[in-house]
Amino acid sequence: MDRTIVTVHGEARREVPPEQAVVSVTVSARDRDKPTVVARLTERSAEVGAILDRYGAAIERRETDGLHVYEEYRRRSDRSPTYSGSLTTTVTVSDFDPLGELLAQLASGESISVSGPWWRLRPGSRAGADVRREAVTDALDRAREYASAVGSELDRIVEISDAEAAAAHPMMMRAAGGAAEAAEDGAAFDLDPRQQTVEARVLLRVTITEPTVLRA
Image (cartoon, rainbow, N blue to C red; front, side, top):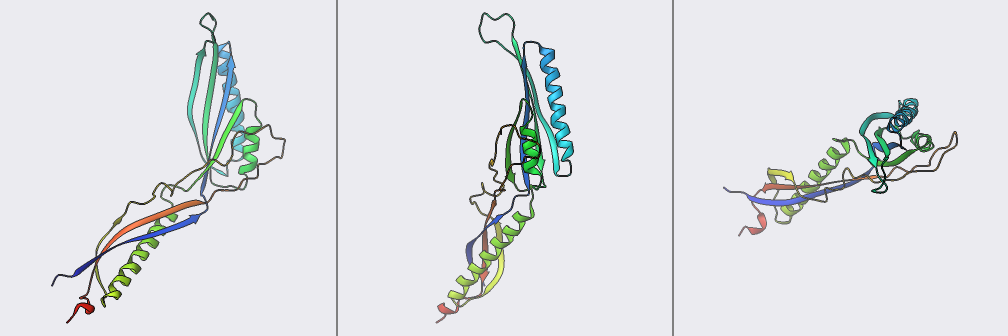
């Protein structure tokens, strides 16, 4: 005998602390002499590297995003160009305790700009799996309510699948700080990590036993 199929959606939403903070650090230089620009970039990059080394235990990853050295002509009549250059490093921090101090140290350097932090969860975070389980539980509870309303019980699961939801939220990042003025020794920014919104929505199809309210 064919069973009646009930189709429901289950939803779950949770606010969780971030697991990582991403910071972008850019050193820059400008001069009419190209070798001087390169030398300054090398020197300032080494300064950034030395600061990051001091906080190595808190840093999960550091990556060079790009080196740019290029000519600039202010006027068409300029025969001698000015050279500008920049080198950017992306830093991923997993220990937030020294983060404010790290940002202050970086921001205090000459010709060093700092952007971030951008708060986020790790890819494949456990929080995502937990909220998906909650969404399935919610769907099953709804299906039981429908079944109970017609005097039935759940029989078997036919399908479970992801449903389209506001999926832009789970790994959302937002800047909570930016470039700062020079910081004195021992200075630290007071940071408030932004809670991350994790959402899940599932589609559940189940069969139910014969409804008793329809029996003659």
